[in-house]
Image (cartoon, rainbow, N blue to C red; front, side, top):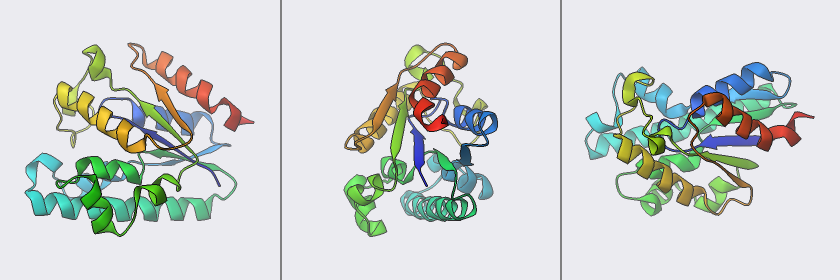
Length: 190
């Protein structure tokens, strides 16, 4: 069972690309949806609407939901590659007290979380090109364009020690960005 993560700041195309690839290559990939969007949507709230304790509680729920999804889908589809819309490392970017406190609170380490995944594809947000729709395409998104770019930088640093970290820059065309991701995934399509 392989696990490939698509990560990056808001507006990077993670969800659209992950869904498209899972739909176009069902014989290879099983989609693991973004846990944060699912958890926030179920509770009809967003990160910026919560106090500090609420943000911590939500990140704990997101982490647990992420792990549960991965385990359930891996068990149900042992012959396929899990294609993840974000991974457990991403929660550290949203922990109010910083990444070190996130690991401590969850009783884990960055090394353990990095080891969960075989490949990581970091996608640069379209906000870097001035193309960003904010919450229009995801109602739980709250970041400004500048914050989306900064979030992407923080995520790149968090994932930076992964031995199979790939970078895909921002593209004006979503189809071009999908093609760039497919080029990285080509070895996994045989």
